[in-house]
Length: 203
Image (cartoon, rainbow, N blue to C red):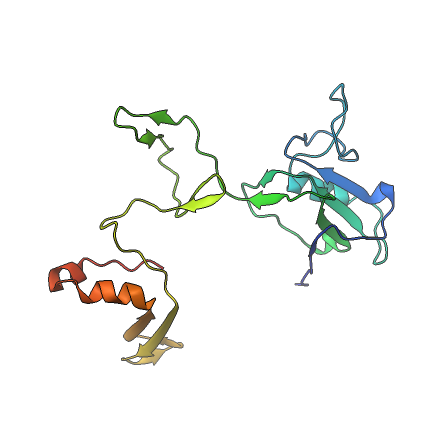
């Protein structure tokens, strides 16, 4: 299987003619040609809506090493619900930001239908199938609810030492050494034996 190198660039000057450009925008429509950066007034044509549709459209464009096809991302959040698969058909194709734009490609899902409870907390009901580890609010990662709320630490490093037989490069038993910031280690030193047993390590 051959490997494909994909060049992601922003505001890059590429030697490409107008007939080898596909535009994609959060305000687009995959039924449109993608040849226009903005929708027409009558909504008859305009940019593509998804990276997958833009990739498929670019595969039919004339391309060469010195004249690559360009997929230009407009400003905004470009949401993806599945991996963007690329293969040799996508050689000589460049994904780039539109001039002055800062597009964001995100696999996240927006949470809607928020409601304010009598105690002032905000709640929303999610589908049972949703499983996630990060919550972002206005572009910033929020702290998930946890208990106790006074301790949370990111690992600086992890080292593993085998204490049992190694089979297929994996130890049957091992001891792990976790390195955390010094200020967090001071908090752990004040925990009782019962509290230490309740400490959870999440990778």
